[in-house]
Image 1: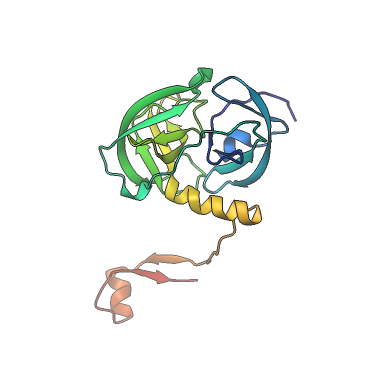
Image 2: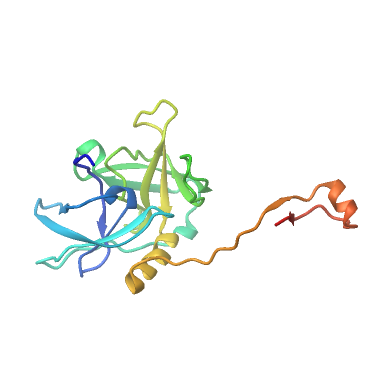
Length: 212
């Protein structure tokens, strides 16, 4: 119930004024203002949010022809590949940091998160950089900067980004129907131990036992 001011990052993905950012950047927002590199400010509306992947799509009505960032293929990224993280860290507008792809398919670093396919990078992603692009050396977006993990709670730590391969699937659904719909299956499972395998007369312990 308290009013406040929040800052995040984002980037234009087409000439119609669509901007990709993080869901947590615009969470509970009642008034969204987009400030572009030239300093001009535009009101924005929310097109759709997917909290599972922390992805959101907003839109401005541009009175110019925007320069947009092309998407790259995050699936082909290699560990050790150089990437650039862009954003507004700690309010310092339009900053760029460089680093490497440290790992792929990382589990979400924060308790309660369910997304498990992060890109890990040592490129600095500080508060205010959330929603900004992670760019390869071809100038293509390969990730959306979304999280920083630090043991002491500081701004320095390990950065995590959502791969564009995931973001593109989410965007298609948001643009088409305004939300993301997924199929779910509810099961309970446990490891197939040697004892259980013997009781079921199974020679292998690979796989899991569905219990409910």
